[in-house]
Image (cartoon, rainbow, N blue to C red; front, side, top):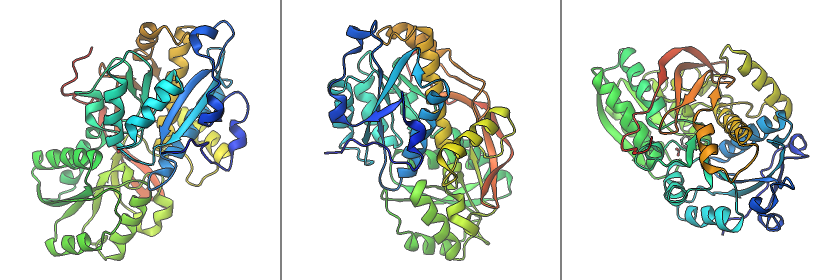
Length: 407
Ligand code: BEZ
């Protein structure tokens, strides 16, 4: 059974005060909102994110970003205090239904924020989307189906679909003059969908994928695959890994002597939040993502300064904390519109659908009809350990939302 967790962070004092995180035991004395709006009961946010394993940094960054946004607004949601109850997802798909039901039925969370992992997202959304409430905010997991065939009025995403950063990446690889490529990733929703999107764009632009490597998640034994790539001699490699796995892949790739001869591409997760840890092995890698460290907008500058001041620079602000920050903005706007009444589900959903993100560190974005960001995808390149923007790979890119019957 997964343990309730108070996400660890050296700067936890930043979060002390109104927006406290509690474990499941402490939270069980919660007074249901419908009995206590007059008394300003806390808004309860159930969090299902990874705080252990290869994606631990992602869960931590999202949590920090969301809490920071709410703290910046006074630590309240429409005048109501905020109570967080967090469960470590352990990146376990089999445990996802049980964890989701725990947050819904036992904890009676008003909102569920999570997950990071596409497989968990699919499992969660089948449960949450079958009901009118609670409202689920996906602050990372890119599973195309969440805002496609599994879309639902009470499911929103503040991150991306797996197709979004990967499709422009395949075109960049072709535009850079490469004719053949190998794809390599983990064999689960995110890896399969991102590699599929990258391949489609690469081949539509004259390239040919000569080998598709999928390895078990979250394995990091890359050696045999790297030897295979060396023997195949493609022009380029297109890859999705993230968190701890991305650190090791990029380092092993360079150590195998491939970096100089077969350039690495991929959705920006390959170097996001980990480029400093990857060191020289990451230098020059070109990726596509909806965020870059040096985006020249005032919101990004303020966000980065505040984040570093609160949580330090290891790993520092990144796309995951931005997605959490925007989840906080979505909560603030939605609840402001209904005066904090979490029971006004229809009006709350309507307000969240029309929420604006002019002040997002990633630049302006808005919700699509399927509840997924319509956003710019940037071309980035790592220089001195930082993912720097080189241009816009796709402007205001909207996911096709294939199969979504809503809206
Ligand atoms: C996913 O599983 O959807 C995912 C995980 C890490 C980074 C990006 C996507």
